[in-house]
Image (tube, rainbow, N blue to C red):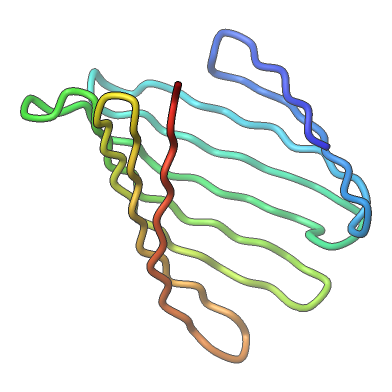
Amino acid sequence: VLAEATWNLDIGVGAWHHSEKGNGVYATFDHKLDDLVEAFTRIGLSPRGIKTYVDAGVRIGPGPLRPDDFISVGLAFAQLDTGDQTLIEATYEAQIGWLTLQPALQLMMLRERTVGIMAARMTVVF
């Protein structure tokens, strides 16, 4: 279960409950730096599972050729029960009418190894 409230579309607070990993709280901050650039950050705290989570990044767009698309780059850090991890991610969000495609490249750095990840998200609005 997750609940979130936002003010002025810039500041948000939320809380979650997971049946196995317990409860947690988080805060978000988004800020428009320029006509084409937004910055975002989030911090979360939980007594179990993900003890501390922090991420930050920038979102660039829309551009003149594809006015509904965005590019994002970010860095995340999580302190877990099983060890710390750092993640670098770059995504492209392509809006095609009612369909959003978002491929992502991630580099996950764990204490014992580093893993490259290719992923994609698809959102259908109807």
